[in-house]
Length: 164
Image 1 (cartoon, rainbow, N blue to C red):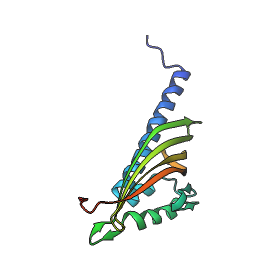
Image 2: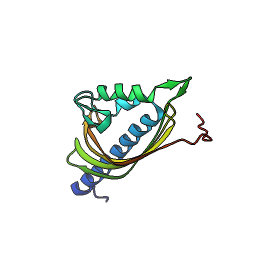
Image 3: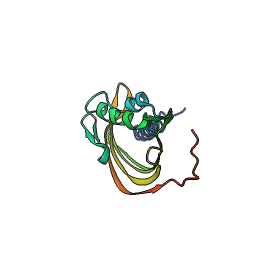
Image 4: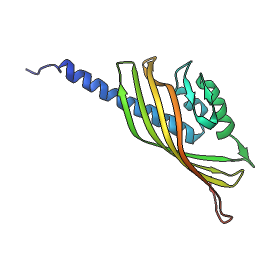
């Protein structure tokens, strides 16, 4: 006869499932950033009261303020083309599940941006310090503070071609 999983095993599996769901959440967030998808971006955060601090981009006590900044940058067009092209790669997740509805995590971000308005390419890195909660049955970002470590900006060469 098969034994039911022990409470310890069930708790371990639940913790691993939570970690994978949080990873998927962060990947949806990053994908929404690069896809210039404000609705997808907003859907990653709690309905109200998220603590967001993205350094130069601003600090907010709700995700709606960050969405407006995101839209003003990501959706800007010049001559019908996107003016800003971003590439977000988060890695080295360090996620701690505190209980069934609360977790925290750190991620390293590799960020690359092409700015067609001022003809530059920027590369930078930093760390996300996040907190997650379960809201309406899904993990959401309740806090995301980004600490930039370093960056470099260089002009695009006149021969550089950017396809969109």
